Image (cartoon, rainbow, N blue to C red):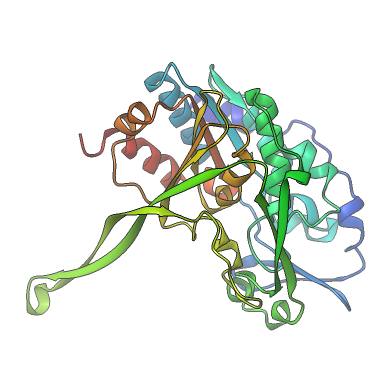
Length: 349
């Protein structure tokens, strides 16, 4: 309870976002769509954003699970990157009452992390680049460029090298309209597609292995006692590709990275520094690993919803030196996220 109380008090800490990115929307049409989605529309552009509602208990649980990982893996560096959502940067003042301001929540949380957990504060660098396409307009994710800037901040904190953008080639999926058309149920979101630009490393070699998770259903009982169950199964793949190319107009463009969430991915790179990274993430974290192939010898990626191994065995087996929690603020605030990470430590023992 003390951590929850202190965190609630800390929400009163001052934190000011520049209004450059917001100002362009002040005179535009701003409305609330289905599920509270904030839609901003003008003659030539549109942006849809998820609102945020603070959950102090959920964030306290998230901090506690990081402390538990640091205690369980004392020889590994543990980092926390809370990824802001688009609403942190682009919500007009006229719609501020429809969402909690993410800035002070993130600042307060990072300032109260357990001892031994390194904060990775990506807010300042994302604010500096907020006029660039760092968040999708038609999807609830950030764009690969935003993930690149955040990865650079993490590399600095972890004291590892970092590849400049000149070491990447770009690929573009055009006419992208993402999840916000469905989430908002606002037809206007689909009328202004965008380019999904991502970055493929060229200055480093890498090989990718993947475990694919699949949900299967089965039934038990008969008649009124009949029940349908859903089970998660895993299948290891031989060497595969990290990037999956989607055609122009595909709504699945963000699944370019690792083929989406339902995969556990391990990448071995030509970087030789003895550093092996584990990223514990939600879908926002999918865009981070490829930005760090020049920073770590190995990069392992585990989703907060899909993992059928024991985490203690996994960390020891793979010689993990660094553990990065990379969840967006909405996921980090959900108690389910922390429960999953805690379960990973004890399952299959």
